Image (tube, rainbow, N blue to C red; front, side, top):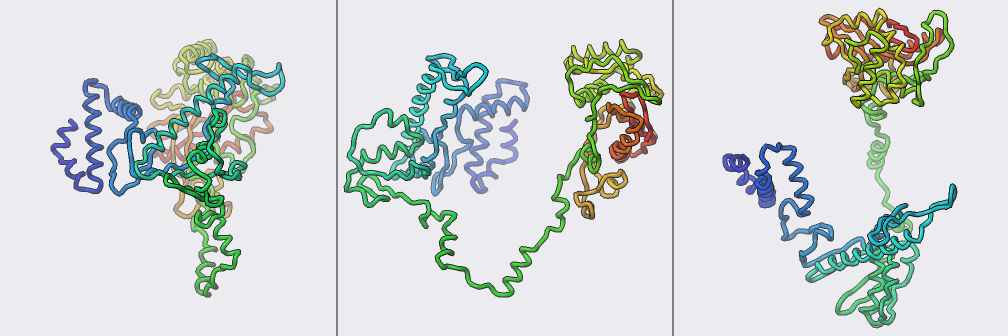
Length: 506
């Protein structure tokens, strides 16, 4: 199919006529080659083909298409440079430390010493290397540095005419003078103590030079190589402090004209016209909006049951609670209300059986099921509001209904939420906020919508009005979102407090 499409559209010819045409055509040919290799695995699908392509690229470690090699600079890793040769090679970053972090891990796995853990005194003190851990780390350090040395050899031998070795050093080692000492054999311990390739070059340089090759402390050369050492503040490096040094030495800028100063003042005092819109994200959750100016958080009140209160249903018994936090128990109740089969909620035993099946199916954790107050859940389904909901067609009942809606200043003000990040001005004209949330229960009928929001707060008569006031903006935003999406009015809005068994219309 790919070959037929390319032939009919002359796509490759069009690519070849454009910039970097050869490279782009090579990419297409690479794709065709992979497709031919994948073709025997018939009816595997596009996803498997893409995974196959990804695996081939990782395994091959090669570039998708040959890059132009004339009048071009190629950047590559040392591994990619193997078997290649270039007229000029610049090897940078030789002052970077070797990555030996694996040597400090608490447990080392070595092919000679096996499992090698660090140890510590019983019940106190820091970890320190055991004998086998020290031996394994010592062995792995030698192997790691051996690999680094081999990589350095590969990189240095890629150059045909000129090799540039570049490094920057800091700390105590950078202050050590590069010496022209007499050549001497290098000890293995010196190589092992190196922290970066620059340390090896520092040891190697005296082996290939004579005292006469050194011109001062910062430069030198012979028929084989030349070197220069630049201090941090050398002007040729254009370090960040160079300009400050120039100004300090009397090179002050010339006086600016009044017109230039006026333009500069205008630029410095400029304020972005839509600054309020930059002070908070353009997307928010309903819970975050509800908390604006309100104390407390949804589902954050403890679910411990207090003494019976006149006028409210007595506290429910039978909740095992477990060690879950109040928020976790609230989440467990919401999960059950979302997953429960509405045809089988006519009794506490039926609810417990449903929770057991949810646990067996992996849809609910066992500790969540143990924390449910089945009496409170049954009370909702047997309440007037619950019976009204259960009488509706199942297709009209939506639980944990996610939504995304757009709200402007007027919408947020009508819901009782402070609009915008600026208390004085709200959102700029024409700006809006994208709000996301999930509605606990929505009954969407042909001509109207009912909205039910479940709360697991433990409420008292004295705190009930404040609770209703704090949740009113949330319910209002839910209602507005439903009306915007389904284009029909929300006739009824309810807060149902599970632990008190109370349904409150708002």
